[in-house]
Amino acid sequence: MEEILYNRVKELRARYNLTQEKLAKQVGVTRQTIAAVEKREYVPSALLALKICRVFKLKMEDVFSLEGDWK
Amino acid sequence: MKKRLIIIYVYTVLALILIGWQVGAYLDTFVQVNQIVKENPEEWFFYMNIAPLIWLGLLTIILYIYLSYDNKKKGLKKRGRFLRRTFLPEELVENDEREQMITGRACRNAYIAMWVAMPFLAISLAFYPFVQSFLPYFPIIVFMCLPLTMITTFHVTIWRRI
Image (tube, rainbow over all chains, first blue to last red; front, side, top):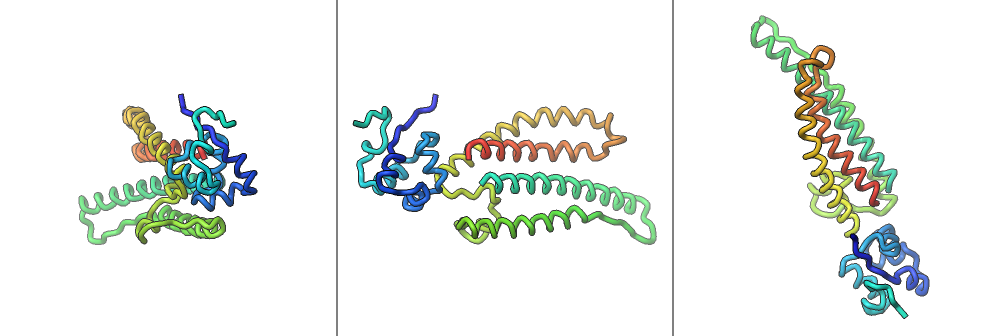
């Protein structure tokens, strides 16, 4: 069974008014990869996850979680 | 992205067919040369069909022009040294870690497909004596089926994951 990594990328992107294209450019990947991360179809590497966190100026655990239990 | 994948797949299959055709033409030429060496006539004359090679060249030029245009439009750039940029197949060009992962999976599946297909293709060669009269190039067709299986598996995996 594949592990799921919950994330708030879609929500944060909306809050920061960023399109998938813009975020992808900032972290150096394709738009399809951001879409796949948001849909939990792809688990990003630690490097990409950290780059995404840096864009939103948040800690790793505030963006990614194994349980998806953000308050 | 999927349109690009289809175009590259169609080109690859056509290239395989043309290469198979060219190998058949080489075989014909070798038979003629063999005859010449045996009979040792005063005048040497043999011919070789190079039409498949010309078609392959034309197809490659067309694909190259299309991909150059498409890369420019999408802002894609092959990285690395000149040899890598020139000879790396387009289907192995990855733009990020997810595409690298997909290529890895596709290569893995293609490798498995090779080992599954190999015994069937080897067994099918046993039928050559029965089909030789109407399908003289049967071994070449069987031989070309192996890369076709691998290429198809590779592209199907990418299609499903991209």
